[in-house]
Length: 396
Image (tube, rainbow, N blue to C red; front, side, top):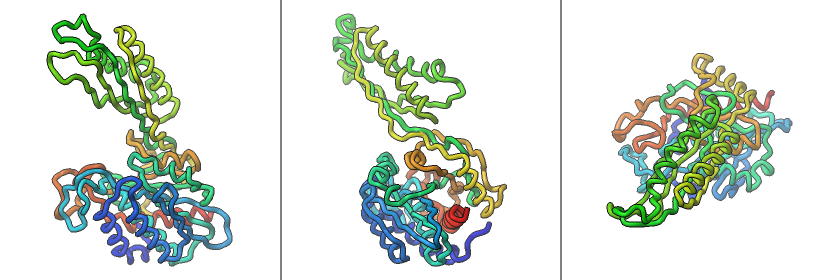
């Protein structure tokens, strides 16, 4: 493994920052303390700092040489509304809030790269270090773009990275094309007619109709879309009634749709609306339908994904780079940045949890688990990757 010696030397400093952020988690658009810390460190190291993009977003800019080429490197900062079960010293001090997805580590790795590049003055071009709020359901990436991110910080390409439990420490994963799915939600209300449960002929039973709708929706996946187009439609909530002897007035059906293309999402939405409306009509009921497009699919530019892989090859060796890693149906709002600029989103192995020697909860070290903790062994590796990616990109 070809780590940068200087990055290894200051690992303890960056690790302390990471653990401080972990101990003080902040939810989406509430990252005031975290953004203050990030901005202070960037200024301390001599970077230009822009604040307020996306509310609590921070961008640090470093310039060197004469080249006008520019690259954006992005990390997310927000935590999750989860009660942490770990008991180690840097556990969350905020009840019901936790860094259960490793955004504290993402921020730390990017800070490590900023520190090294600021010290070494080894750039010919511009690097924008983008610290984004509200990845967890807040579409903070889009908010930063809407606030002028790429106008104020022009980038020829933009790159992101996420830790990945189950992938070994020292391994990376990347793929061209779709890497993560879109995230969409539906909320269906079936409006029937209440009645006594012993006299169903006097009402219009929304529960019975809801059951037909739920069964019908699965036909979208198996009989409407092309079999080679990946998609998930999961009904995750059915709410109706309050008594065993009463047919309620309404029933509610909620769930999620995940796809790897906007075209497939549009097809599913169209067919969902048709099934709901026609099923309700057939039984004399009415329907209210909401379908929310949240995050688009995260689609890597093929050339930039391969470029990122070659940088990884030089650091950990080609045998430790999983090219064409299997895409995940999880979603990521870095997708908005990839819609605006070419680039790639990659994965860095977080291991299987063996780094949690003491004080950890009983659960697995998986994302969004109350026993999760970022593996600090990734700090020098992730920072080295960011440094080499920026240097190589600007030298192309």
